[in-house]
Length: 125
Image 1: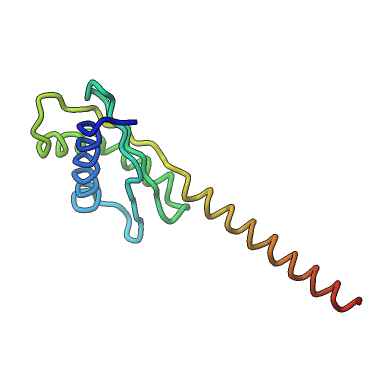
Image 2: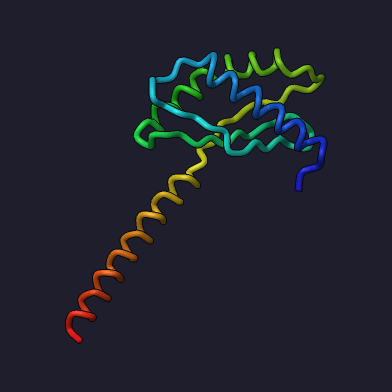
């Protein structure tokens, strides 16, 4: 569990990087990037930023853009964070949302099959 200090730094980094991505980065229209988690090391040298991207078909494009613009994002973030130690940012794709969507589809399919099976059984009886 992260300390209160680290949690505050994570929140600050999330807010700053989110603003940079939404205002200063030129992504395709209709592409949405949300930061799902920020994990900063205890020594404040490294920060992993987990991102969720919608629509799924734009994941490759968006991750390439984030990696291409990492130095610009890092520079803007460093200017906004007034800290002695400035963590190095790494973006990581958080596919949890995509997995949840896939599971929802599977559950819906199972429900539909069960409903279909129940209605067939009721007709036979």
